Amino acid sequence: MKFIIQHLSKNFDKKQVLRDIDFTFEEGKIYGLLGRNGAGKTTLFNCINGDIRADSGKFYMETENGERDLEPEDIGYVLSTPTVPEFMTGREFLKFFIDIHEGKIENPKSLDEYFDYMSIAPEDRNKLLKDYSHGMKNKMQMLINIIARPNILLLDEPLTSLDVVVAEEMKSLLRSLKGGRITVFSTHLLDLALDLCDEIVLLSHGELEIVAKSDLDSREFKEKIIAALKEEEHV
Image (cartoon, rainbow, N blue to C red; front, top):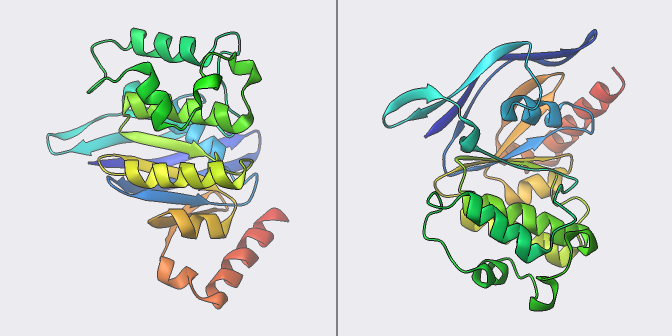
């Protein structure tokens, strides 16, 4: 399975954020989308997810049955700032999500099995989501995407503000889930991308460029990447 982007462009007023992007993402890999803050990573995700309209370009899936259009259920999107219904408890939210996807969930489990899987303590499961920490809200976002099993999982800097323990739990979880899907993990942290991701993709000056991890292991190449990002910041 492949996810293919062709000739994607997006402008905001006179600023061109994405410039005629062509790229192919392959199943079974975690891609680190590396770029400075403001480089256009969230814009790229929002175009893929359909939250904003691209000025030009198209997306499609390539499977063993041939090419097909991208569909909403293909995509899971975990935002950097978790968005959950804060008036519901964790258990109510999870039950609601499972109920509305009845018949579509592969090998459904009990609510508590799902909570156990995400290491959400029993005493937290009946709390209102508004009382959850940032990390716990992020876990709930991840959990519903695990249950839904989208073909493409977009992660918009989901680990940046988490404590060390939760961040390590999430990284381990993402590694265990990468088979059978395409995971794109945006970050502005080079070391995080190197630690977690199979492929590094640089978003700079509105264009995507694959970067060999063997190159990134060298100090000289790291300095070149950092210099490119600093140069863009002052454009």
